[in-house]
Amino acid sequence: MKISVHAVGRMKTGPERELADRYFERFAKSGPAVGLEFSGVTEIAEGRGQSANERRRDEGQKLQAQLQQGSALFLLDERGKNFTSEEFAARIALLRDGGRKALLVAIGGADGHDQPLRGQAELVLSFGALTWPHQLVRVMLGEQLYRAATILSGHPYHRS
Image (tube, rainbow, N blue to C red; front, side, top):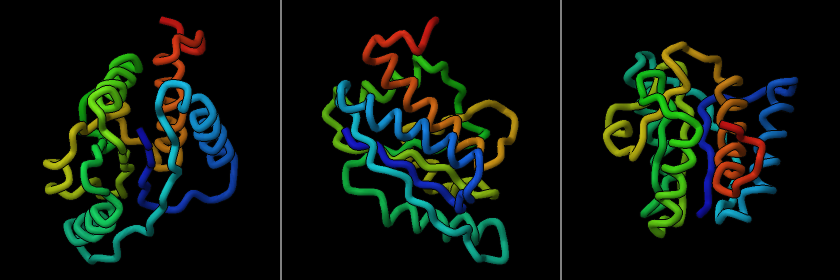
């Protein structure tokens, strides 16, 4: 199953980008052994609307344009559900084992995700009730995708 990341906002060069790239690279190398192929990160500019609703709608339309027919959609949102790393890995494995060909994981902009997208998502996931900077969310997502691949392969990186 192909896994891609959609991110609102551009990540500048610096330590956060280096760390995110490191985890995505680890995932890209470890994922194929468990049937997961990393398709990369697509960045879009923040919406230009005057209101939060307009910005969310603009960003949501750009995300919809990337969503292929039959792809699963996971949204990262502070109001989403909290999962353990094992539960997150199991949800990915369930999609893979169910024959899904693609998963798109989306990091929203400062205003969050558009309501129609939230209704369409198979999972709205939170990395906790705290609000995290976009750059750190990308690092944490890269690490959790890598961790999911190690959990599914039985690698000792993840120890319970």
